[in-house]
Image 1 (cartoon, helix red, strand yellow):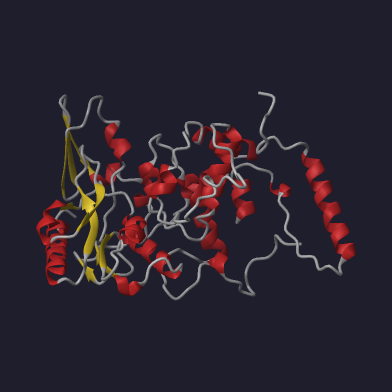
Image 2: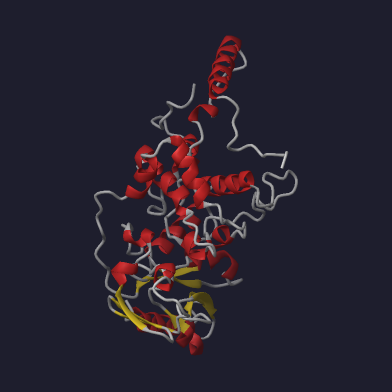
Length: 55
Length: 318
């Protein structure tokens, strides 16, 4: 529901990720982090919830 | 709906005289027309101060915890939505059923005061209601409108006009509406592309002055220290920065996920006329579609974000 509301507000859905990884699942952890990094990188720098401190 | 007030007063006078309740929370006349406000009555001689009309748009469930007498019972005058918030309060252990005496009022909707004010250029001096006909007077002119034409949006799409829990009803139940498209407003936003949606919410909240009236009017917001007031850590900046405004509105809405009854008190209270329901409506639609859930209807059921069920939707989790 949180992701849906963000998406509804126009924030890219791919910026929010949920996963359940056991401490024994090292490979899954690597895979998930890689997938998240790839997806977020593809979206470019997020400006919507970022404060502009140069002002 | 005016007729209910005599019955409400009789019930309250009787309850107070017999000592069955120590206090009644109801609506009272405001200092200007259409500004009905919550009042507490403790003596049967004061029941004449109670009013009930189409301007009673706030949610009295919000005042229950603060107004609760040390001993004995508190009576509350509730519309359909207020009663659902009382249920939410009870489910969340904020108030116990046996401390409440619930006076249910079947509701045919509340008026949008901004819509009415827009009909006038000068100050409204009088507001009277006779059935479905509303007469509003200002020094310049008198307008007569049908209540249906000036109804608040949340009342137009309300499907729970009758209180879901009560000890006594102050009138005959009214017919419930059935709607083909209850979430047409949400769908309209959903149809836009992401940038348009972002622009829509930026435009919506651009006048926000961070007064927190929406939060204060909301019966769901009872945390002793709200996240916006917390200073260690400070979750959100306190100024008018767009990012802080966005964060406030997003989080305020999300805290209502699966709990909001769409009573409209937030919009009613907003001094800047921001329809903050655009946020909560999306959550209400999702709660209904994903969990078949409408808040405040059942005292025995835990809210969907409060419990785990094996058939909860889980396609978002990797």
